[in-house]
Length: 95
Image (cartoon, rainbow, N blue to C red; front, side, top):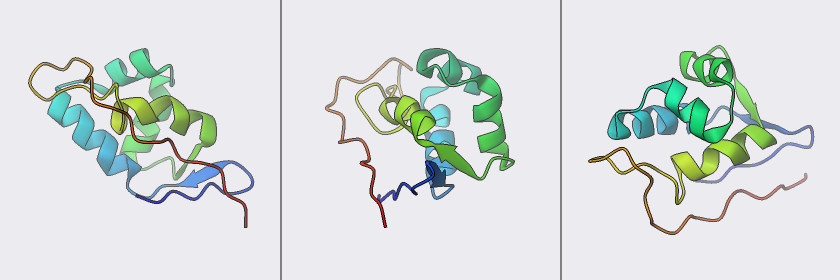
């Protein structure tokens, strides 16, 4: 998945909403659990999942990345963090 970070620090909605929903469903986590472990406020995650938030600040993406795409992603069977290697987090591009 290619994510382009815009100069003003907002990530377009893209697929992250669906990816977060998939991760939560597979792990059996409520959104509040993701908020607790990632440090992203629960209202931000709730607005993102409901479609009321159309983009993400880069800091929010970096906090969610390990849980949605990386080495802290919960395993489907247990809901605990995976030990797999994290893909490289998105890098900031301009232009």
